[in-house]
Amino acid sequence: MRYLAALAVVAVVVLAALFAAVHSGQASHAINSTLHYSFKNGSCTTENRVDPVTIIFWNLATTDRVNQNINAHTDLDAGASPNGQDFGYNGACLAQTVDKSSCSLIACTRFHIRGRQSTTTHATYGTTTQSTPHHEDWVNQYFSGCWPGNHAVDKGGVETQGGLPSGFDQGREHILDGFAPAGHVYEINFWGNTQEFPQCDGDLAGSNGVVYYIKISHGH
Amino acid sequence: MSSLRWVLVGALASAFVILMAVVLARPGQTAELQRPDKVVFKGNFSYGKAAAFDRYGLYAPGPSFGGMPLVAVTRRLDAANPRIPANAAVPKRADWVNFIYASGCAYDEFGIDCDNMAQVQVWPACERNLHSYEGASLAGDIHPEPVTVRGVPSAFFKDDTMLEIYSGDSTIVLFARSEEQLFTLADELLSVNAGKVGNPSVERKAALPPPAQGAMTGTLECRA
Image 1: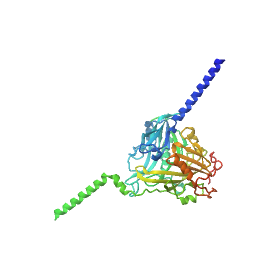
Image 2: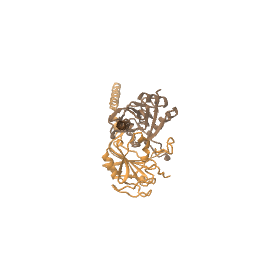
Image 3: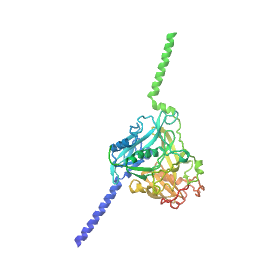
Image 4: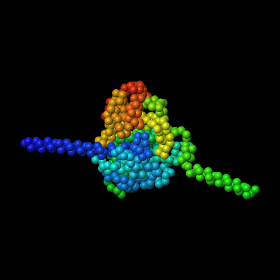
């Protein structure tokens, strides 16, 4: 009897330890250890934020598979930009590994996506890559902040007055417009990363905070 | 005389080539010369329009905050996103008035870079509230930390240096450069459109109105 009681105590302790281990694993391996914006200057600090993250590719979303799927399902099949950005994971600030656009020339209005594969595996979502798709205009107006030419993400406006969703929201929808018909499962979440960013033309652009989680199961 | 003319033409042509070479060899400096001296922000709204706004209560620290002037006010109101189900907790559309304060700004290759910046982005609580984060919180991707600010329930998002204050029919979203600046900004908020939607006048540091019924559970209906 005493032996059985001891065994029960040991079993409870082991189960508690397992429960704690599983939950601590979820906490340390979640996407949460990423930051919710991209960054410039190799430093993932608040003042260096550039673009909001609005799409997470998950499951088997390595850099190669994400690039292959973007090529296969969207018109963002060209290289992109000289201005690289960084993404924050687990305290590290890491250079982008995805950089695709809908126009092979620098000087054009286009859709553009930057991204970075996570350094750890998410307990629920597996291998993930976070990304910052957007629509941006090429602006080379003399005596503007964009001179002699630079990209400016579209500002958002008031729909009833002819305004459009921001370039960040247009970019996220454009990517899903390509992936959803191809059978990629997606979830819709809200991260609230709606800070607005001033562009070189003086406009302000921000996401509506919605983030799509798009499942990647194979390459192309 | 003829040869002198050719010498003059040659000299002028050489001068032009040298000038172009100098210009093209230093594009950064040339770009600076052709850019405006002062950074220009283009908001699509104003403090005056915000004072007359009658859809939900607005709050901001006034014409300046912490030595930063109000550089722009923006208004976003999208059509509802058809991808988001009607019963989802996620906001169906962007709907905000954003007050942007900044100082020490200059153009850079990514747009406009500022030494200091803070934003007060006010949403209707019927669109954005603590309930909106349900899915991302369960996945472990977002960590709202419950706090009380000026007497009302609020959520602090440490990873994003973001604070959400739930008051009346509004969700007041604050962005700042540091945690200290964030809570100082919260202390400095005052009502912008008092009385327009039955919201009381609120001075700096005073208690804010409690959240409207349903604002914290995601069941508050939006005004038409």
